[in-house]
Image 1 (cartoon, rainbow, N blue to C red):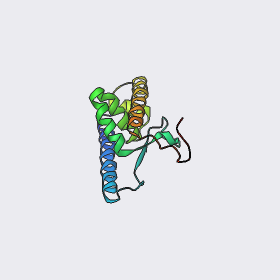
Image 2: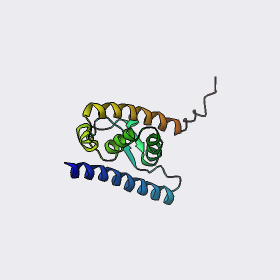
Image 3: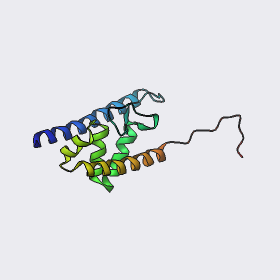
Image 4: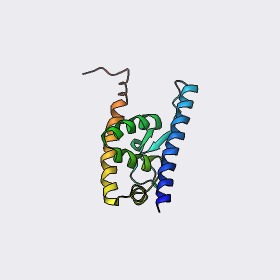
Length: 133
């Protein structure tokens, strides 16, 4: 059981590194391109994510680094869920805690990440034919 937990944790972290490195290479090679890698912050990993659930890999990576300074476990939960695709039960098993704990940590982490990612997203510009009021 311990070997499985360690494997899942390493796999999720490895996937994060692969996706981040790939996104960095793409961004460096295609400046200005809107083609980037995205991962989901959806609650159900098997479901189709809503538009707001897809986030840029590099932005999520930076946000997870910030989150880890506030809560290492929330950052680990988010990494396992978003990059590892683990269910709540698999995440709980990997971290050695109960699913209730993981569910609560995931809800808080996901809300924090969405707020942090929204803060870094520039506001869309208003259409040129409208005047500010």
